[in-house]
Every structure is written in structure tokens, then in C-alpha cells.
Amino acid sequence: MTEDHGAITAQDRRAAQKWVLRMLDEPERHAQSLADWISEKPARRQLYLDLMNDVQAAGHAGGVLDLPPPRLQAQKPWWIKPVPVLAAASILGLLIAASILFQTMRTQSPQMAGAETPAAFVTKVGEVRTVKLADGSQVVLDTDTAISVAMTPDHRDIALKRGRARFIVAHDAERPFFVKAGGMEVRATGTVFDVLFRNNVAVHLIEGGVEVELASQQTQPARKILLRPGQILAFSHGHEPQSIVIPARRSDEQWVNGVKSFDNVPIREVIAEANSYSDTRIELMPASLGDREIFADIHIRDIERVAEAISGFLDLDIDRTEKGRLILSPRK
Image (tube, rainbow, N blue to C red):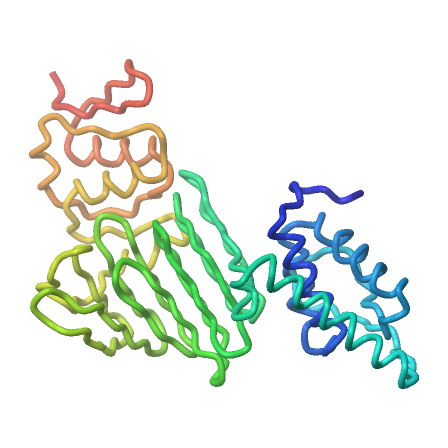
């Protein structure tokens, strides 16, 4: 393979078989989704072409997708070679070949009959990046975040395993958009919202509207809550939610830009967020200083600048003698 950006797995081979069947059936419908699948791992391109060529060599394929180089943007057109008229025997042969291939796929993986293989996206500590989904939606992944994505003709499912993500949802009335995290499920059509899943779980609606379903608890059944823009639904994971909906602060939606405007926010919260972006940790001595509130614009992903801002605000010294620690304490 000439474009090996990652080892081909057995899961990739099973998925390639599915794409061949789809492209033989409805090439115009599935071409863009195939392109997105290949762009996630360019080595998949040759895998798909080899499998399609094998099918054609047997005399059963009516056409093949002419793949352009892998890309991340969806604006460029895809071209599909004209499909010649097939004789009745060739059509029958195609149906038999597709049937045999489908039965083989079902034997290899019983999950393949229902939905596409989920795609996984992960960020490292300190990394923030945006991924574009096959339906045109975008997801901004915060530091140390992991999601899985499964797209089907009927719905779009996202599982937030950990971290925080912003979802900019492409409108599709026929395919609802679901995000699951920590015992709750968010349903949206066309909207912008954040979901957090760390020590607690929260949904912050920025634009549009969402319906949040909370899983049943020991003392109450499952519930659905509608949010309005500027509201946050927050509760501790695994516990009965007490205060459900709270108003969002201005800084709550600024994490995607890096610079956050903190308006009388406890310093311990600022430190906790800054520490999540770095292997170096800010420490306050005494810890009770974290109860003080700060009013400042801070680049939250730059641990040194956060330490400087807090030390200047509280008139503290910064001890950098220990690797991986920035210890803030009163000046002597």
C-alpha cells in the first residue's frame, strides 16, 4: 500500500467489504461517506480499491468509484464512472456475488447487519481539535477527550467516553442526532451545544434547542428536560441530581478559543481547568487561597500564563524548582 498512515485492521477489512456492497448498490448516495471514511486513514483507499477490483475481475461489478486523493473538506465533487448496461446473466451474477459477500460479512461480525462500525476520535492532554463528521456536523474535542461516532441512515449516535466536546450539528430532520454521556442522552436536530463528562456531567446549550433525557435513578424514573440557550444542565455522575438547570457564565463557552473571561470565578476552578491542559500542575499553598475569586482574561491553555496571572492577582511567588509543579505561595 502506498498511503499507509496507519496499520490496516480486521475491522477496516470488514468495513471495506461493506463499502463495496454499498457502492455497487447506490454509489451516488454513499460516495461522500466513503470519502470521509478513507480520509480518516488513507491506507483504507488501496484496501477498498483492491477489493472492488477483485469483484470486477470476477465479472460481477458494473462500475467502480474513481477515488480522488483523500481529503478532509466536502466541497470538492466526486465523479463516478458511467455504469454500462448489464446483461441479465451479469445482473444475476452480481446479485449472487453480493449475497455471498454479505453472508460472509455476517458470519465474521454479527454487528454489521445493524449499523456502521463506530469511528473513534481521541485528543491528548493539551490538544484541542475539530473533526468533521460524514453528515456535515462538526465536533470540537477538548483536552483528553474521547468519543465514538456511528452514522446510520436512520440516526446519528455519539458516545462521549470522557472529556468535553462542542457539537455543531448539521440539520437533518430525518436523522436525529444523539449524544450519550454518563447516564444521560441529548437529542438535537440543528443546534450548538457542549457536553462535559469528567467528575460531573453537564450539557450547555449555546444555540437552538435540545432535549436531555436523564436515566432512571433509585428514587425517580427517567426524565426529559428541555434546555434554552444560555442554560446548563449539570449533575454529579451516578448521583441524584439536585440543582438541575443553572444559567451559563460567559466563560463557559469560551474554552474553544483558549482565552476565557473569568468574572468573579473561584481561583481553584481556574487552576483545575488550566491543569487539565498540561502535565505541569499549579499548586496553591495554602489551598484555601483557591476560594478567592478572580476577575481577569486568561489564556487557559498556557499553564505559565495562568500561574503568572494568579500570582499577580494574589501577590504570590512562583516556585519552579520542582519538575512538573508550579507552586504558588505568599511572598516572603
